[in-house]
Length: 260
Image (cartoon, rainbow, N blue to C red; front, side):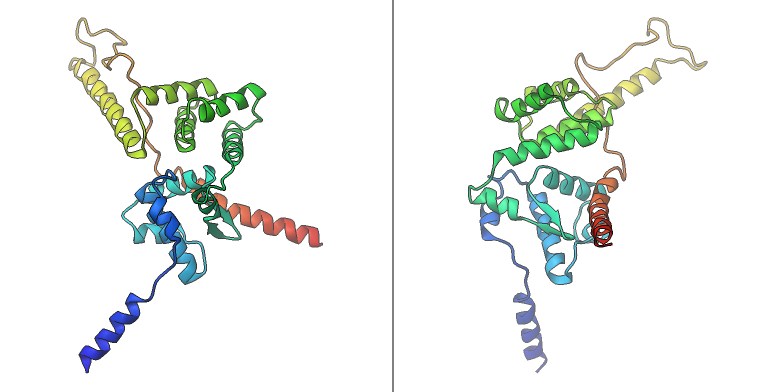
């Protein structure tokens, strides 16, 4: 009897599932998605289908082996790249489905990139700057996610110029960065060089706080051309995740104001 109940329970669990379009499972790589990004989307959709709401970072962190920052960065890239939409407090994958069916409009990608640059720079872009960003996409064939990562490097460095972003993109192109994993490895490599440089400079100092003869007051032991990229600041992307809530509150406030 117990065995029968167990079989019934397992059968019910086996058929208790969430839905996810097969066209995305079979072609997510061609759409520029990584396995981690697909799993974040699946987990968000699962929460929405089972709980009827968009999950918070803590819920997703408990479900996955990723940190809050990692999940927030993934959601940021997906949203700002126009791959998903957040509307009515829910995540929509209609843009991904449009891409999978060949109905995607490239102009939408560019508008999303323009908007993000203007948000980060705090001003409107000039016509020349718009052309530069379009050239990265059309001529250089840089993917939108890579451009956004280069913009993030610029913002973290406190430089709000497209020339800096272009320098970062060219450096990554020379390093043959083609995936997020390769970019993460590249960043880790240069952070490691930066740490080695700090150790070398510290060891050059004598016990009384002076540098050893010949060490030079401003010597830099990094390899020529090496650039230490800033690490992701803990909690930095919480503010982006909060955008979801802020947008809904703003929309609710506008609706209530207009009704009055």
